[in-house]
Image (cartoon, rainbow over the protein chains, first blue to last red):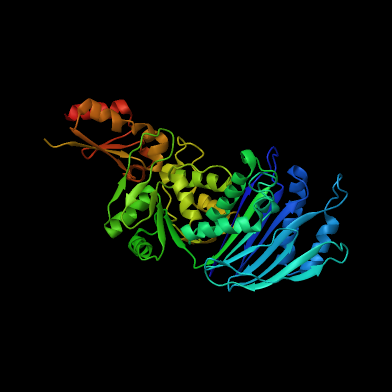
Length: 385
Length: 83
């Protein structure tokens, strides 16, 4: 099974740093993630939450006792000058691909567990801190089933709209649940990325003048069958194997993309399917998408992938609707992405008259796969052909 | 009368060497020649590989004939000759 996880965030109004921090890692057979909310807001909160999340992630990955880990973190966080305490709240998630999950919460709102459009109720085991008597951790050991969803929020979501006429106590957990259930009713297979974004957007719209009074973050986990994708880029090194690889591409069970004009020619020739390039007056921008029957996305190669890597690197910025934007969307809407990277080089790309920004295909694919794995928590495999 | 076929290569080398600007021909050609010319894009004409280091992208193919170092003026000129 595949664990689709994503986080959306919004800064507190007038602050220039996020006070909440989300860190996650895909280890073999499991996903570990931590959402932490630092004391206060801005840079101070950012440091507290960042330290908490990254330390906790390392502790959990190493299999440390969670209670001991939390004590160490609390003792090592810097003390707030105003409040004279070191503090940050967190939700830590350790979820295995067989569905067993351990969740530890401290201070954050209780998470939401949805199965088949219903909210599951569950009782945690409560553990008090040895050194900080008023701090209690809630520990849940749960078993997820396919199509289950978990949603974690910072208090900026549950308290959004606090004090306004319509929502005297903010959205509260019930308000957030109501919104998510309506959303899932309309779109039962919505991705974690879109769901977390929608929750943050909903919380922001509850605030007066859309000015967030606290940092708003939502993490969504969706336990589902993996959505597979295959990207064919670059012609195979041995031309006599073109047919074999073109057929492997054709028979792949999942979404397919081709990045590269020559690669498109190879597939078109071997499978006898025409490829059509479109002209669009967009001087200086990227070549537009091409069309080939049976292939979901066909783009130019190196230029488009270089731009796509830029989009993936800067995830907070808006993704444009050009070919690279479409390629990024293709990546983000998949869980397991296989790359078939043809090793044949086009010598004309090394012409010194060409711009130096023209990257080497292997390097750019490596960069994209690293970004997809580390930043967007996808499963990536590379095959050089 | 048979139409003249114009194919603009939109492969990587051609694109960075100027075919991105040649795309403006899609608006210019009908204004100048009406429907006598059929203009399409091509994912890669393969000229950059076959001509190797002696090649001069961007390439445009006009009725099967390759125009190298293509510019808007050069392409319009070639079409006029063919007509």
